[in-house]
Image 1 (cartoon, helix red, strand yellow):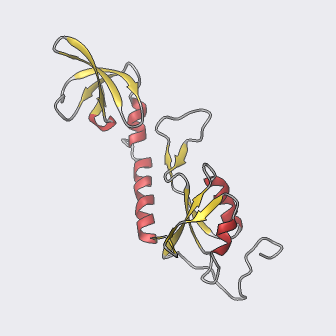
Image 2: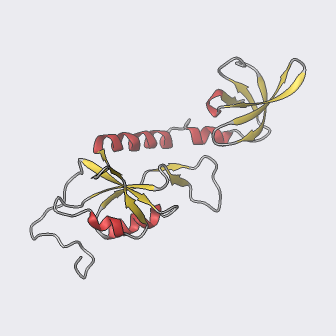
Image 3: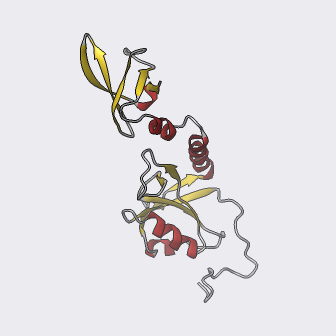
Length: 184
């Protein structure tokens, strides 16, 4: 690094336009943002996919890391070494398969990012759907053996919804995947 914080690149070295693959680093627990900042300071191209929180909280950010404990990075220029990553604050180690650093193709990472963007922007995305299902809301089961039955939401979690149904004259609380339940 030179005094301005820029990597010591050969004169005339141009940055790579788009990386063809990304390296994977394991971060210290909950230190993804620290690793992101420090890798960017070292002029690495960094990608930390985030998704909207299923249950928003006023104390927490609106998004959470898709792959907790991992971050994707690529060298800024072809001549930039990845060895400084191992001692970067927030990074625990490089992910390796044997002696080779783990990589993911740019196309695969782009597909993940496109999927996230599609879910984030979709008005019927999972986060928006679960947020519409509040405790006490009237719902209808849309698939499976209970299709068409109506009930009341008794509890909502990110991967299930507890619905109070009347079955054979008795109240039963059953768990359903959020995608199987529709608010009335």
